[in-house]
Length: 262
Image (cartoon, rainbow, N blue to C red; front, side, top):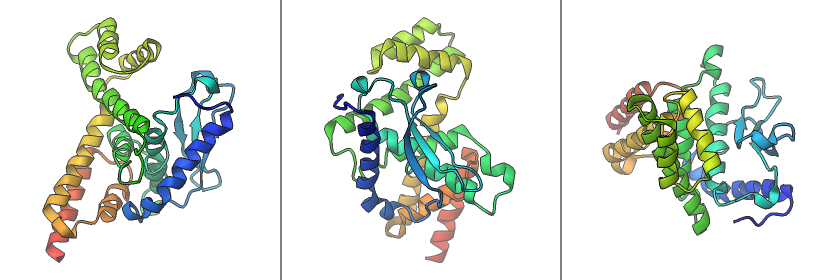
């Protein structure tokens, strides 16, 4: 799915995704960052080796949060995962989570930039799962892109554990990934070597997402008709990056407080 002939069309498509989401975002979020946000093409000097990424804005608010998109050859740019990618890297993924943490005046300065991967990447992957609620994934190619990304993160659970706990060889991990996901051998090889160099980091995405989804389900069951998805998201986001156990404790206390006051 490679329809673009000009790099600006790629940027425009991401901005269009943002516009399509806007009518629905208010239904899920009332705690939103003040920081400005932009989609930009990755700079030429690093574009060929870069991945799509979110670059946080400055703490003083003078530099916006930037979603960088590498487009080294626009004729080979495949757009099938653009919606899930925007949700993860931009809104409501890393841009909301990181910007709200930076803007939180109740946090000491060292906590404004603190990072726990299971929380940060877990939130971003959870954000991908909000696509239907945000009016996205209506195109079958974009829905496939989301499912492909989900499969990729699930496979990470297997290969990272295989490499670091089960004695797997590099070649075994590469072959398992080739057999089970729609990625090129070059991309998979790069991913596997990343896992080898950073044990456990690849697990954080799916583990964090599963925990946040588990806590949302718990809150929905416990609170019933009084459950407010915006309030739930506020509680998850308001204190910034925390270990998952602390997040669970916080959500359970919030549930208890809601039940006591109803």
